Picture 1 (cartoon, rainbow over the protein chains, first blue to last red):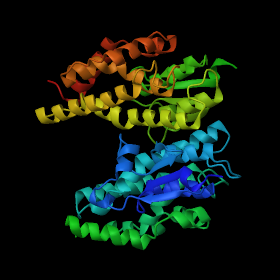
Picture 2: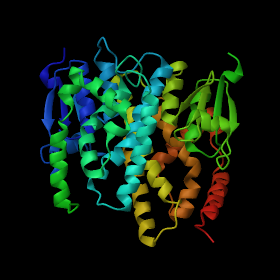
Picture 3: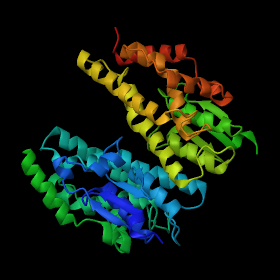
Picture 4: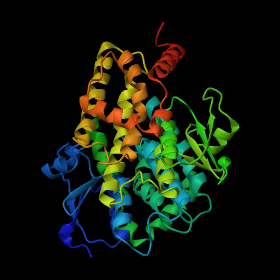
Length: 225
Length: 220
C-alpha cells in the first residue's frame, strides 16, 4: 500500500488533465497527497512544479517516490502499470489496448483544444468555426461509443478517463457557445451519467457550476463579455 | 506467418511511416508495404483510417492501427523481441514522455521551418523554436548512446526519421544544424539496418519538399 508521502499529485482543480489522473488514482485506491497549484490561473507556478516539469511547466505532475511523471495520459498508463487492481485501466489484448490509446489520443488531438478554447471566444467567425470543429469531433466520438457501455466495451478504461473530465464543461459549452451536448449527443450524455456512477469519477470531477463560475469570471476579465 | 498478414499503408517520405518500418524491421517482421498516393487517397486508406485519413496505417490480419506511436507500441507488444520499450514502469513513462515531446514540440517546430511563406520575424521565431527543442533533446540524450540508454528504443525510433528531413529544414529555415552529440547519435542509428533501410536519402526528401512548396505556392 502506498504511504501518503510516496505519491504526490501536483494539480489544479479545474484541469481536465488533472481530473484524469485523479480518477486513475481513485480507481486504484491509491492514497496520495494532493497539492493544488493555487495561483495557476494567475500564471504563477510553484518551485516544485517548475522543478518537476521543467520541459512543459504544466500540471498534472505525479511524483512517485520523488520521481516526477508528466503528461496526463502517460501518468494514467503509469498508474495502471504500477498499482495493481481488479480493474485494469488498459485491457490485456494488444489490439484493444491500441484502440484504447487511439481514442484517448483522439480526445487530446480533436476535443480538448476546441473545448478548452471556445469559452474565451467572442461571438463571431472564430467561435463559429471552433464550435463546428468541436461538434464534428464529438459526433465521431459518439459514433465510436455507439451502443457500448464504455468506450472499451464493458470495462471503464483509458478512453473513458480521457474524455469524462470534459463533461464538467458541458454546462459552460451550453452557456457560452449555445452547444447543448445533451440534445445533440444523447449517447455521450448517457455515457457521462454512467461514468458518474463510479466513485472515482464522482469524486474527481469538478462541479459544472463551479467551472462555469470561474470561466464566466475570466470572460469578464478578458473582455469577452 | 504468411507475409500478407502484416500490411503497411505506407508513404516513403513520412517520418511517421518510417517509425513503423523501423519497428517492424527491428522485430524481423515480414510485411507488405503499399505506397499511398496522398493526393488521391485509396478506398483502403479511407476505410482503415476514417478519422485522420493519413498514412501510416498498419493492417494486422486486416485490423487497422493508426497513429505511429500507438502502432509502434502495438508492434512492441505483439512481437516482444527485441524490446523497444524499457521494462521499468518509470523508464517507460520517461520514454513515452520524450516520444510525445518529439511529436508535440519538435515535429511542430520542424514543420514551421518549411511549410509556409513567412515574414522574416516568423522565420526567426521558427528557427528559435526549432533550436530550442533540439537543445532540450540534446540535454536529455546527455552522454548516453541512445535516448533510452544503452539500447535503441522508442525515443530513438521516434526521432531518427526526421534526420532525413534535415536538409529541407536547413534550406528553408536558413540555418545549419550543428550538434556533435546528435551527430554521434545519428551515426549510431544509421548503422542499424532497420534505420538505414527506412530512411530515404536527404536529397530525395529535399526534392519532395521543394515540390510541395511549389504546389502550395510558397516559392515562385
